[in-house]
Length: 231
Image 1 (cartoon, rainbow, N blue to C red):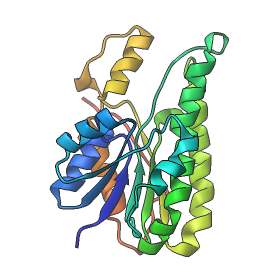
Image 2 (image 1 turned 180 degrees about the vertical axis):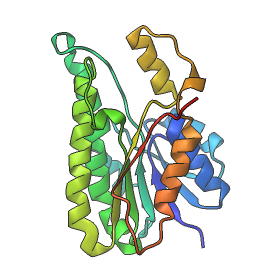
Image 3 (image 1 turned 60 degrees about the vertical axis):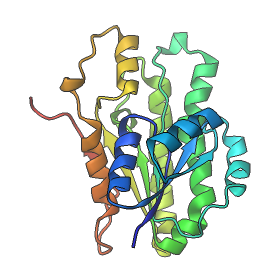
Image 4 (image 1 turned 90 degrees about the vertical axis):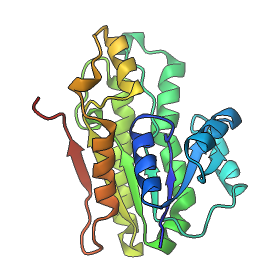
């Protein structure tokens, strides 16, 4: 029997690798898209997947968008993969950029998780928060982004304790630098040359996430870190 997964960030990077791997093994996908044109692109990318227009940058609208989507009563997982980043030292922070990171990286996952909890409980499902190495250690110019990821870890820790009685498992995944479009943007902001071969491949992080989903019910994996290997 196939499983049903709701995924954010399936358009590229880690999210695309996860969605492709799950679809390849016959699982059902529900993908969130920020706009109708983006939804059309995802529908073309993942034939047979269900795509729901719900903009993570506007968390206040999520519950309304999802209520109208008639989601299934059982969800085997909710995979929070989408994220945005803008690097800047504290004295150069731009409010709109900070607000966007807070909304997409922290508030939207909280709202989305709350909405999906009944379906997750019904399936004794798994919530996966794709965090970041920046959610464990904050470096100069990463303050705003790291603050959202530290917050996401805190939410995951609280949720894990709250939902264990309902059979819902919660895992935070902390990837190091991964060869994604976001990483290319980070290198540009850092003024550094980008070479995808130097970093973790998205498929490697996706394999880690699938191992979390496939973990037998007699165990849970609260956190897992993935770091670039020795080349």
